Amino acid sequence: MSSPADRRTFLKATVASGLLGLTKPASTFAAAPAAPAASTDWLEAARAEIPALAGTDYFQTGAFGPSPHRVMERTKALLDLQNQCPAHPENIGQLKDAESACRRLLAETVGAKPSEVAMTANTTGGINTVLWSIDWKAGDEIIIGNQEHPALLLPVYTLQRRFGVVMKMAPVDRPEDTVDAVLQRLTLRTRLVAISHVSRGSGQVLPAVALSRALRERGVPLLLDGAQGPGNVPVDFHALGCDYYSLCGHKWMLGPKGTGALLVREDVLAATAVSWTGSGAQSSMDEEGHFEWQPDARRFEFATRFLAGLGGWHTALQWLGQLGWPRVRARMDHLSAYASEAIRGQKGLELISPADPAQRNGIVVLRMPAGFKATELYDRLRQQDRILVSPVSQPRDLRVCLHFFNTEAEVDRLLARLKVYCG
Image (cartoon, rainbow, N blue to C red; front, side, top):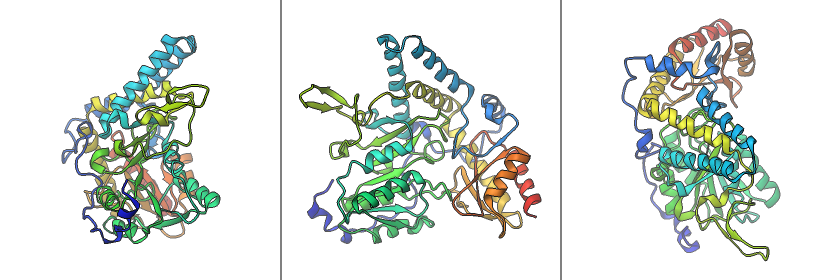
């Protein structure tokens, strides 16, 4: 962190240019080739492993990713092991080994060091860990985006009520304007910028590298809400340059619910106070009040946690790695382009998510004609057609989440039903 004197110069700093959210992908989440593989044998085999796809067109990965059989089998096996003798050190040791394996593979997947990874239960837990690490004073400021999830909004509202923190909202609708929009709202009272890496409501990808660089020049930390990031877009924590990145395992990475992680950059660890804590966060302690935190991001982990689920998440990451991240990414890019063009070609529908190939990802958002409510169409599609999509904040917007396992035929079916309902 820079000194207060350094921060007084932040308005004079030059805004770094750049629109993309990363400079280079992690090795295990490499950039996708231009087109999907010719053979779809791998795809059919992978689809057969996901029970949620039987009889349902599943476009809700951005809310709850459907886990393959092997993920649940691994989780159940670890739960059975735990239940055989929960207090036995050998059983506990195997569960801790599963957690450590997940930490290492996740770190490799998202371009972090294992020492920078704190295992959590969800994205929200990581967000709160960072927000409550700050000693807020009345009049301090936090800047967020205008498309945030309640996971960020509610903690910020609580800061407003309890401490008199000032919330400022920056528009993220146009990535090319986002950095300027954030910087225009900065003052010497700004303590944190907290914003979604990928918008859940539009699919817009934050120009994270440029924003991180600009904020670092001004001594203001950046927390990215990565709930819609890893597994959907390439993520390299070090290349992004943010201070904190909170994510979950149960969406695009297809892990069990109750799994997540907070990434804390090595050089901000000491400046990030521990506020919400308990047994396990310490490396040593006594009953006289003497203690030392864990030397790395594990200081933000504590109490009884879902270690069996972390073992299942490790299996999900292994499986996706075996399928091949480049192939998975290529397939998602193809489906996103396919759906985007089909939406733009259907009368009455408007494409809200990015059409630019450099910005496009698995979140495809369409706007219904005037007079139609997304919540009503969501219910109709679910009840009558076994098609699962997501209504989002805008009342006429439907979110279609496309992971590699979705098919063109499923997209065609969805748009055909919308044509009937809205035609």
